[in-house]
Length: 226
Image 1 (cartoon, helix red, strand yellow):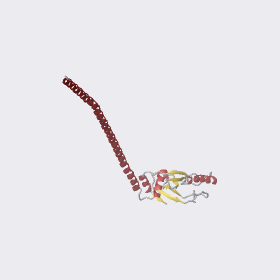
Image 2 (cartoon, helix red, strand yellow; image 1 turned 60 degrees about the vertical axis):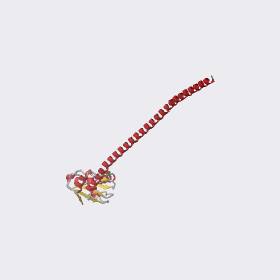
Image 3 (cartoon, one colour; image 1 turned 180 degrees about the vertical axis):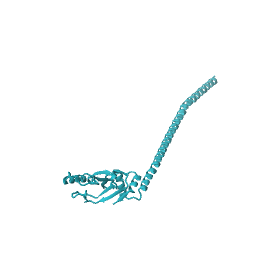
Image 4 (cartoon, one colour; image 1 turned 135 degrees about the horizontal axis):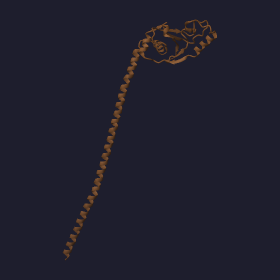
């Protein structure tokens, strides 16, 4: 009787252990699976983030390379043009003095007639009477240059002084006083002096444009300095 009871007890204990082992195995598997899934999700998200960072880095690098390439193309297209233009200008006017270039540019811009046979250049020192043919006359307060064509058809000339900065002071003094005739009787000395004073005190400052080099050279070749 005691042996049977003991065997029954052992069988029951064994059954309990088997059931407990099965239960632990099932729980362990259920607990392990979420952990493995979480690790896999985390790894997937990290890989995805790395891929996005790599894509962004590649895009930035491509954009930077494209920008550098565009800048390089712009620079290469601009610099040669500027250098070539500068060299052409230097070569075109090479061999001519700054004074000759100035005379030609002034006449090109202010001369009343461009189709001239000759451009006469006369230097008039300060103190020279505005109208040497008059017994009374005011004088130029500074050195001036007189430009005029060699023919009457070339029109009025230009009398000016240079400022050394690309501008000149233009004197509204006629090249041929009274059209080349004596002073009219209705003009007395006071009227003449008043007109001359106005010419001296009201010069016009004009900026002289460089102009086209070929046109300037054509005029320079017609210069005759008196």
